[in-house]
Length: 370
Ligand code: GAF
Image (cartoon, rainbow, N blue to C red):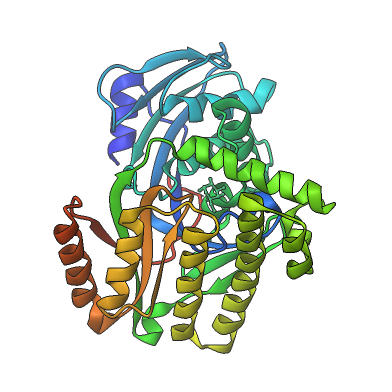
């Protein structure tokens, strides 16, 4: 394994453990996690591998096969930049349970595709350290610690979805998570048995303002919940009455969150009943709500969705935080070529840079590989 070889070459000994943690796509339940709502992501076949050996002197040595040069040497709480923040953040959250580490990282998640490479990095490192130090954390506790690293150390106020998907997913299944109780179950998600595929359409565009807009959406939801006198938008039961009491953006955000939770539940009902093709309509409705009520889509994502449907997809939506990244499309296998042609053609016509296509099958969550 090349990450193990690189570790040996850099640090002069074999790593004591090596863990892999995947990225994710979200089938449905977008911007619901930090509103105590429901999500339905699954792990993708790409991820981050972390080869790790503990140290006892409070130092972190860190290298990545995706960035050039010598290992970076940092203290366990030291402020750092770029990708190293996610690793240092995990060690900072572990506090005196760990005292430094030598770490080599390898990753194959397409960069900028919005498939949660940062969550995969956090979960891979946290899982390896949990293993090495016998910390006894459950996968959910690893996800929570990784989220805290991202919230408190990196400063991104994300919910729990991405880290939970990376830590808890199971091959061939989607992960239904109640983000309030943290209760979860996995649901069989085998599209090929129904002659379907889930195609990721990576727009290869990521808009700069994404972080600030994300925090703004979260603040709007929290403000709307306060005005409605509920702990979180999850608790809105009478949507019409709630909308009467809100205005402007807060009204629109509330409409999205409440109906998106309904869509997650409806989609699970369809999967249980075996009506897989019919989930497409819910994907479409989710996209329109994210575009018009939550306002987190982008011209590239909207075009990917429209063109995929024109090419024969049974449904499509943006996935993840938005403002770029990827869309997903539910495609009958015999239409895979025509959907891709339709999207490529539409992008060329609008002068957008060509998108990238990746087939998504549900993969296994974080696990030890050596
Ligand atoms: C990003 C966040 F990290 C998640 O927590 C979630 O809120 C998602 O955007 C939107 O559903 O991926």
